[in-house]
Length: 338
Picture: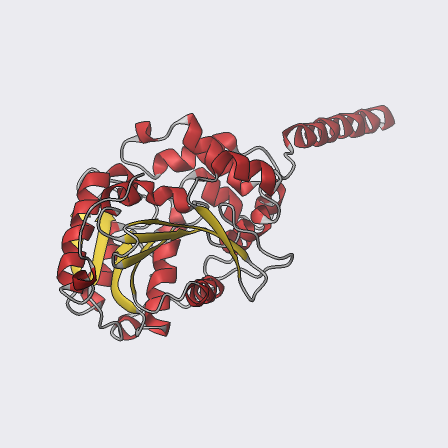
């Protein structure tokens, strides 16, 4: 019996040793910001230091004298998601894209406490630093949640609001069964912290493929960008905060959203597996006078998957929404050299 018990302990120890060895084999260190900047900055990349200690990465592109359009990306993404709109709308609009704390090339101080409200306030400090007093505002997914919270807090600044697959409504999918495996694992309070420092390349690939109707949009360059950006110093802590605290927010309600009186455009994909299409309908129903466009055979990221159609819809909307208020400042609508 003692021999059997000892053998069992030996087997358990061996399994534990293999598990520990596997963990360290898969463990990935942070990637320095300088390394990431060398790979992912563009000629338009700029930085601004905010009062919170955040050093925000942004791009200010397009028609310098055009009506400003400020774009906010979603969870684990970066300002790169807006490049298709910059290319298609930059002939007419001044397009400003930012990386939120814990994302892209933006640096946050140690111990940064992430939340929708914190991100909203960082965006406000950014607009103050850039002297942006009036602008159109768009947000994708979590960035859409930040955008509508911003519009509620600072309605005098927002001339028009665009919600792209925006989050913020209480989740009503039983067990969140439609979510990609990476989100289910990261939300687990035990597994999430363990997975944080491991090589999540294949999980990230699966999550990205689930974000598109056509998974062919996901290539190695996209996967590597998401994985590398998540390994910037401090980013994994912030991403895990958001994931584990995804229910700790002030949800959208019809009563809250009724306070939005600026023109609003709601864009959604009909096969969105991350934010149900019904949530787009809820935004439309709750915001008086809003417009809703649902793209067919489209997933969670229409600004990339339906770049032409979504950019065209935004242009038409902004022409109507800004109607003469900003357009007279444009003596010529010629594209700047790129």
